[in-house]
Image 1 (cartoon, helix red, strand yellow):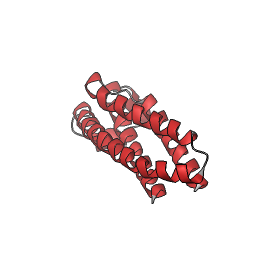
Image 2: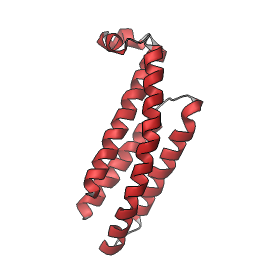
Image 3: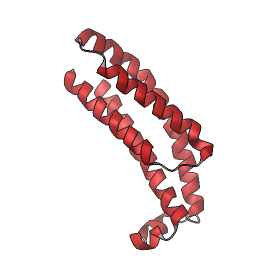
Image 4: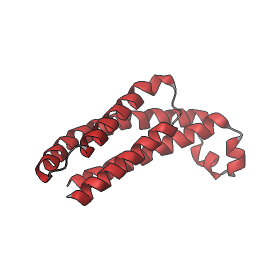
Amino acid sequence: MSQSVTRIQELLDACQQILDHMELPSSSQFQVEELRHLINSEREELTHYSDEHDTAIHLNSLRNSVEKMEQLNEQLIAYAEQRYSYASGGAAMSFEAQPLEDQLHQEEAYHGKIDYKSCLKLKENLEKIHQELG
């Protein structure tokens, strides 16, 4: 079980790092802050359990928190995708086909792309946590 706990902690740390680098507008800050709070709470909880029984109990409650995180992230994905689509003129594939240097000159679209891809990575990490929880 300790390998699973370590892996979950690593994934939660990765989720936190992703959130720290996102530049979503204030209209989505509630979801970002709520996600940040849930992640920090779970990271803190996992560090306090030394006995296998307590850890197993907490891992069961972690499932509920991960589900809440996934719901919040789904909202962020929808928002980020919409924002990215708008910023890229509805042509995200064409935007991504451009050389990186050209993308960087289109700041709003570039940041939209990064935030959207970050939300997708959060989703992937949360799915991995679910797998670890069994």
